[in-house]
Image (spheres, rainbow, N blue to C red):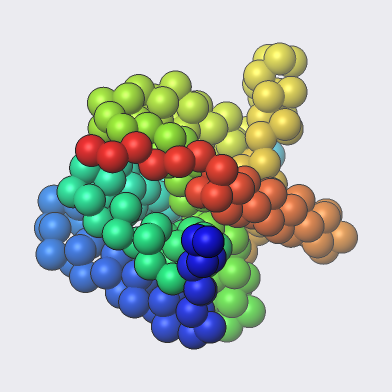
Length: 264
């Protein structure tokens, strides 16, 4: 009779080991750092400077400051993409099959990947945040904590979305196609480029249905000196973002457990 595989009890050690692998791999691949950090900065400077004085908003007169939270969100998105695309690479190299055969739970695999992508995106976003403080972005300990918590939730959620898309795929090209079809529109319809109140009706509806919109509004509350978001609305947006994070994390664990990984 076949004996069931025993799972190790030291789950934190398994998560830490796989998380550290993600961090070391990222730091050794300088092109990933440039791509994840440089592209959003170029977007911010070119689009922000191009729109300039033609931008009109009742809450934020400066478009560079308006676009800044969306730029941090884009850093998280690119980091999530680069982090989860390694799932396909690990499958082709045989590493993923070895991890799945190891006596660790599926949830440990998922959380190590999500924490890896989130911690890298969080560090890059905070680096840009501190370097951009002279531009007029308000700073206090309370705001810093709010920024960190919001970025962490958004990073975990977006890495989980990338994980869900990457897990059943065996082609990097297929992942890029899904990324262009799903992840980028998710960012574009978050209110990062333009405020929802000025959009056409159907676009406005899509923005309000996008869970990233509420996380981005939280981030804008902590980063903008002109935010008029009420505290009870901020709390509601936090609940929505947290539910989104829990939902996509649960789906990530489910697909890891139910969808079998094909041999390379």
